[in-house]
Length: 468
Image (tube, rainbow, N blue to C red; front, side, top):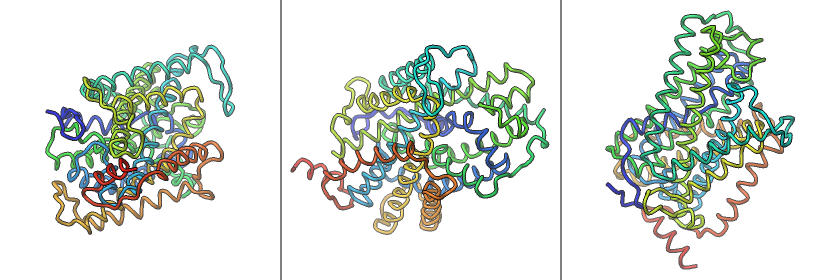
C-alpha cells in the first residue's frame, strides 16, 4: 500500500519498527566509549548516569509517542513543530536533528575502521596525514569509505531491503550481548568494579552528556512513520519500549564490562567491551565475537540514521525550507534518493579526519539532539493546550506533567554542554562543527517566510515560498 504523503510504501511491521529503533540506539558507542565512561564515573556510576539519561529520554519519548500517533507523517518532529510553533520553530527542530542524524552516520563511518583494526592489527598501510596526534592511513579510510557507499546503496534501493538488513544485524548484536552477560555471570568479579563510583558528580555528568548521542534513534520511528503498517497507537507504544530496551542494554554493558576488567586494565584498553569479553571467557575468539557484534551495531545504527535523516530532509524540502532537490522521490524504489545520497556522501568524508572525529561528533551531535528534543517537548505542551480535541490514538498518561518534566530535564542536559561545565564542548573542533552547521542553517532560516502555527501551516508555508 502506498502512503498518500509523498508516495512512501507502508511495509514496516512490528519487528521491523523495534529493530529499527533499538538498532539505531545501539550503535558502536558501547564498544568505543565504555572504557572512558567507566574510568570517569566507575561502573556503577556510569550505570547510574545511563539510568538517569534513560529516564530523561523515556519522558521525551512519551511526548514523541503521542505526537507520532497523532501525526504519522514522514519527517516526525518537523510536522509536530510546524503545527505547534510555526515555520521557524519547525526549522529549528528539524535542522538540529539533521545534524544529530548526520553526526551518528558519520560517527559509524569512523567507528567501523577503528573496530576493524582490532580484528586485523596489520591492516594500517599508506600513511596519509596526522590529525590531533592520530595517524590516518589509506587502508583505514578505505574501509570507512567502502562501507559508507554500501550502506548508502542499500538505503537507495528501498526501505524493505534496509529493514531486512536491520533485523538480521540486530539479532546478531543481541547474541553478542547475551554472550557478554553470560560471561559476566560466570566469571565476573565485584573486586574489578572497585571503585564502583568515581569522579563524583563531575564523572556522572561526563557520562550523562553523551546520553543524547547514545539514545538518539528512537525518533527514527517518527521519521519513518509514513512507511509503517501498524495501528498508530501501537507505534507510540513501540517507541517507548525501544527506549526502555536501550536503557537496559547500556546499563548491562557498564556493569558487565566493569566486572570483567580492573581499573588499570580499563585505562589501557581501546575497546573495553571486547577486552572484557576476552577476559571473562578467557578467549580471544570471544573477544573477536564481541567486536563483530559491535560491527553489527555500527551497521544497524548507520542504516537507521540514513533512513531517519533522509526522511527528515525530504520533509523539509517538501515544506520548501531547503532546496527541492532533497525532496526527490525515486520513481521505482520510493525512497528520498537525493537525501540518502547526501547523508551517504557526508559519511564518506568522515573517515578522512581519523579517530579524533569520534569524540567531536558525539558532542557536536549531542547538543543539537537536545535542542530538537526541547522543541518537540514544547510542541507537545502547546498542542495539549491549544488543540485538546486533536485525535491522539496514543495518549501519554499525565501528559502535561510528563511534558514539563521532560522539558526541564532536557534543558538540564543542554546546560552540560556550555562553557565552564565539566562536559563543555571542546574549542575549536566541536564548536566549529556546531557553528558552521548553524551558520548554514541561519541562511536558510533568514529566507524562510514567517508562517504561524496551525494544522494548515505547511500548506501556507509552501504557498508563501511560491509567492516570492
